[in-house]
Length: 420
Length: 161
Image 1 (cartoon, rainbow over the protein chains, first blue to last red):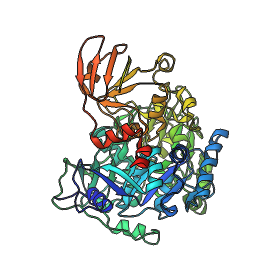
Image 2: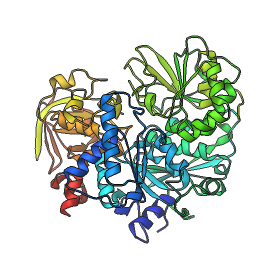
Image 3: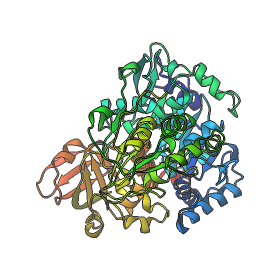
Image 4: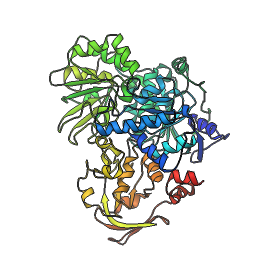
């Protein structure tokens, strides 16, 4: 029976010639990931169950990114627990303050994850690495503990939805507008338990940062994973980064999909996801005057170098509107450093923005940009649930970096002009 | 195994951020976290819930973040079971892994009202609404998952197997 790209990777990692949708398998894991929120729960479970050793110190990644530099004493205790566990098990991919980044920007950048991998992470946005042609999915802390102990995880083989991409994005749009548009079309459970496989001649025009952003939000459509085929863009990105040799899997030509959805990239427009669900999408141009109090440009969705470049082009030489707080967070120390070297940080500060070291902070309402009652934020983050960024009566509008930066200058949600 | 109790009714797409807001995730302590279960959409839940009570919700319960703290706080509040039209993938997996009983049943989730007294038999999947007298049949777990639940969670089952 023909297989999708996801099914091929799962079959190979389960040591099977073939798998089919619905089949329960046990698959070998290339990387097991956790962060400063989910790892402590995993470590407690790992110890409680009586495991002494991790399956492979080089295949575990622990990234302190949610509440670091630590926001309070309790957060510091959680980081300390992660640090002690990583140290006692000689975990080679342990990223502490100074070398950390937001995990889903950091692991691809550092070459820890690569094409053909089977990856679980105790963070829902682990699906990001599908952009590299890997099977990668979010799990909870107990699965992380089991993965660290055994190097395997159980999966129900998913069916898939095929997204056939054609054309090329307009100058004022990016991967964020693509994935928000798709979530608006199929809903927050439109791909529940399924793979989202992105194919077609339009793929080649999307940068790696666009693809990482698109796969990052596959979970916001309920998907098990999102995945792109491996092409020249992928190989160019992986070259000189990958710690391990990339393995290329391709979907069979006659693979079965639950449905195929055609996406004409040239017809995408700057898109906003309004409160309080990511599926509540509207073209930015149709929203009218929506006044904002805060702008956040960052996160595992949009804190990469292209996102910083976009923000720079728009903010440089301009001023953030009076009454607006604009918070910019490069997602890794490398991106942060590149922003310094290129003069972006100076331009951001001159524009009236603030720049933080990498953290997930505001995206999940942790710290570094919490909203008061009645306040409204336009953010390049990934969720706009009730209370996500602070008070239950605050609002988050999800948007691309171009739309967020443009809105920072006007003080209202504003469609970006051509910026690429 | 079964549970009996009062129903707390919730809508579609209840996300893990409202089940346990991230602002409290600076501790892995379940008892401390459970004080804030559902507080962003239902401030009364923690005050009123009694052991064995049941959450009944719509589609896609537990969507969003992978935080295992979400099923954990529901379990720690002594909730006997969650019934929904459907569950988000990671929540479903986490609930099984930590031993929180969950059942998918569209008809029951549609018809059962807040405050109804219901009884749930996990072995048979039979849900009985004591208030209205109506019964429903939820889909049973596949044997592979039943094994994890019977053994008391994923890690215990891994150790034993």
